[in-house]
Length: 233
Image: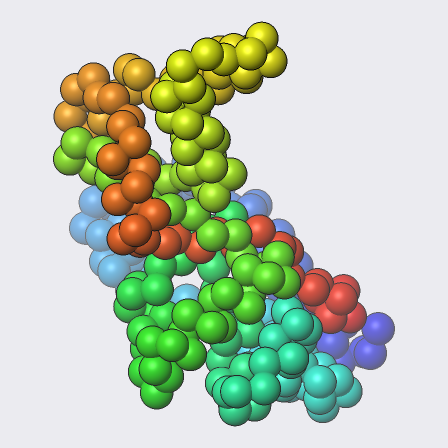
């Protein structure tokens, strides 16, 4: 390591050692007034600089000079394929997704997404979300409204409910259909579920499912990890 950088580390270690070697019992010999005055003055002499934070800014600046591609779309490369928004908006979208943790839910009308998309039409927002779903970056979920709240269900579960209700209307089911029906009943537990808000017993009905399909209120879950290649550099 460079001598100048090493000298800074040595000074830090020296001061840290000094503080650790102070015997707290030595303070008992002083009066309460003396200790109170000392305690008041002490903070004014402790003005530690957060060198690591300042140095990190310099490191990041040098990293951007070395890898200018970091200034563009680099977390989710698929976003580059979008040909109906500007390069600037692609970068903003890429960074927006990274602000959320893996497995976080997004909604079309959340504040941050609305800020990002303030110059986009609803049609463009929908098209972008569907694109991200097609690239398996997001997964689409339905809000299924029950009682005084909603539960989150994916497309697969919606289809299972539809199949269950379809089978329930079959007058004469085959053995295979009975087996399928029984399996769906057990899996979905649709007859008695509990409202997450008031704990009342509820029944998920075909009307609830159809209302969800006909008046969709989607949530989008981030299911793909971002590209972390540049994190290691």
